[in-house]
Image (cartoon, rainbow, N blue to C red):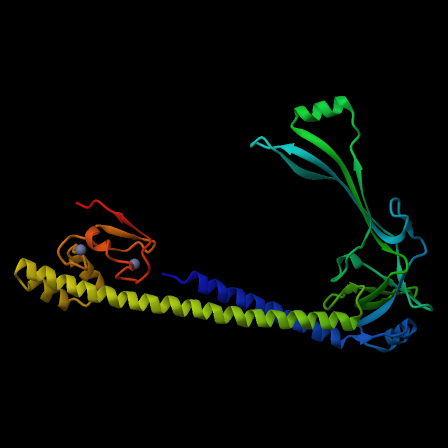
Length: 339
Ligand SMILES: [Zn+2]
Ligand SMILES: [Zn+2]
């Protein structure tokens, strides 16, 4: 009798509420970081401020030693290449299904910096940052060569090779990026920006205002969804509780009726008096004669689908559209054989 639907709605609402709160907090943190408009200001800030210094900077990606990409022809600072073998597989049901397997996955990164036209700041560990995604530089599909021997061998193993898909993801030179992170100076005075021990670390093509607006939008969305789910969950729990109370009340009424009828039949009132003195429903259940609650004559032997209640004889149940206990609609009546 646990209202699982309502409870899971309320738990999801709580999870969404927490997500919304953390998005809202992230937006507040981003609002509070120091915005550096010109990279040369960063050196002065680093000399003056107490560390750690969390800043937001923008500029274009540059490097002394860029990677020349094999497939896309781009020059980049971070390159990831994957190759997937695509094939058809014979499954147990006798049909061919498409599948793929990763053959190769490699990545390269060279030291790189953001450049605002005059000054440079090195960026460290961007791949682990929030909002960082490598754009696809090239995507190509090479079909398998048609060698008869190879084809026959694969076919015997239940495979048909289709080809290889190569994807190259590149962070190209010249990309505009915003980085939010900790600014630090190494022993030779080179300024870099990196993941702070505690605090935000973003590397994104969006501006900091877009990042804040985005987080705010998610925070609001989570809040609305959380309120909606709470209301719906409360409605489900209330519905469940009301149905439970009504059903319990009807069951007690019907039992009283059945007991009275049984007592009249046996010509003595002892059972009823005994039953009335017992307040406990369980004891009452034990004393219950197996009488149909409608005619009070036959023994009950019909089970209602879907509610599963058993309180009527088959003859009476044929006139019913709803269960006398829970009032749920009867889809089917199953006869049981009792002894
Ligand atoms: Zn009956
Ligand atoms: Zn029922």
